[in-house]
Length: 463
Image 1 (spheres, helix red, strand yellow):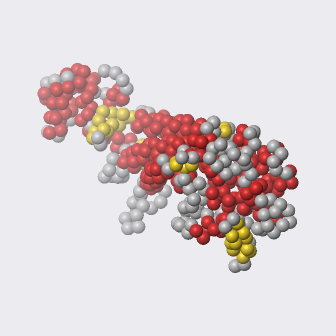
Image 2 (spheres, helix red, strand yellow):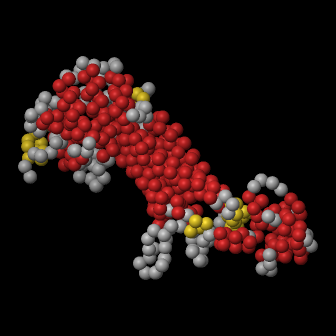
């Protein structure tokens, strides 16, 4: 490999000749050979938006020449188009402010801008990575801004649409199954009847609340730290810069971001990310309940509950012919476990704000974006390859319902709890039907029993 010689504030550095990144990126590569987890490209693209917006506003404020702004703008557009994806090799496990990633972006944009101006990579002229690309900025305020932009975009463009699709399918299923009366279960034991549609309506409500929680947290997440610079005071920025640069970001993204009203909080604490992760964790808990219910309801098909049938997507066993497993539910369960684990990491990282700076930013956004993306992908897969194709096994649910002892609950208002319990115990102990036990005990005639115990009516309020 051929190298070029560059220089930074610490001295000489050898950089691959073909690389658009520079000395500080190379130092990070050499100093942080830790793991395989790279800074997500969503963060890099968010940085492209930040640098493009900052250059335009700095030019409008008379701080950056029009010629330099145009070069930076062109380089940012190429970055956003994915032209330089391979030029961002840095791992998550770096400085806690994300400084090396900020400089990685500055160097790539600077070198490309200078190349467009006819200069060599590493020349730092006419566009300097610090003085021009990083003008009015610090890693301490750009990295949090990149976190906010990348997380909000992924939530709004990918996760919420996937959740809406899940919610719509659950609503359709709740209507489709609204007349399918079945045994309810509490403590994994037989309970009074419900409809399969009522069960699915509960799942739909969980997802609805999950969407609402995410949308509520977006308000805080949309507060951008940009303009805080190093410690929150805005040193080395024009007084109008913070508000104007957010307006430009909004123009570029189509999202209504706001300038954080308190820049000290915006860079020293990341409660917005912690709260968002909490909403994702709650959503994961909901999806765990739903996916586990689905696989239990479909268990069998002959020796389990078998009340519903799932789509057959692939063979389930390498040794047992004909076996089919609830694989979509199992994949979703694993995703939810990962999201819950990520939330623990994000919560602890969010507590590491020392005075004017939180120093665990990269690990926070890495885990948050992973949680968002995993939930979005798995929800879409679960919706289309599982939920959409669920069918009810009417014969099975009718058989279970007929055998349920908890239908005796309908007799409580008529003969009282104690006599109803006596009927249930007699029926269970002597392997008889509830009606037979009630008649033999002399508490009801067969006709009275049939008039009182109507499973379909037991799924609604009433006596």
